[in-house]
Image 1 (tube, one colour):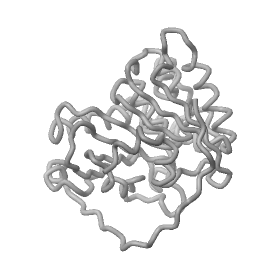
Image 2 (tube, helix red, strand yellow):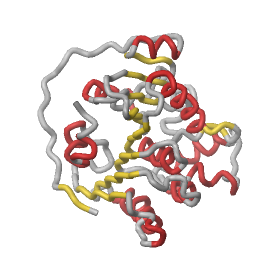
Image 3 (tube, one colour):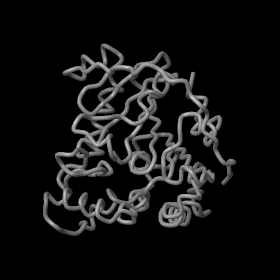
Length: 279
């Protein structure tokens, strides 16, 4: 585990907004190389060793929209490799959900449906490429779950949730659980616990061989206490060298707390392992 110093936000020049073109079919989007189709944003880039996947966190305030929005889509122009950003289809004013952790319904796990689409994208644009996933908060949960279930070989996550029921906003968690149960109150079936818990998903050890970079802001006390420390307890022991490729990065920023860092701050947090993916 290592720490990085407090982060300072650089001043950025204002740029004209970029309009993201919309395509009716995934094939049209992939052929165009830049744009969005449904809940997927895509930008093709020259090198094909990896495909980077960015998952959304919660959509709050003006970002809570029935039109899919994409966290970090503007970073795609800085990347060496193709980029896919994924918007959670359950999150919209129509559903009332601001966050759903890519859980979906009991009979259809959204995250697995997403990976069916991502594997199709890979087969079209970069067969044989390895997936690198990233997200913060709920997007960090999805990135870790993608790694724990064997889809991704590298993961960068910032202040993620580890077990959804520990989320600090109880009403949002209960609303997601109700959505999962098709509108009825209910519990999580024992056989589905792994969908809601990185710890439970990790017990199958499908993530073995993957590399995880887990960054936690210690000023985000609830996530440090309720998510980071339980993850450390589960995955940082010596049995079977389970932590050999899990890197814990602590930083402290009392302004950001749980808010996601900027691109420049993210580069500073993760250093070379993330920077090497950029142009």
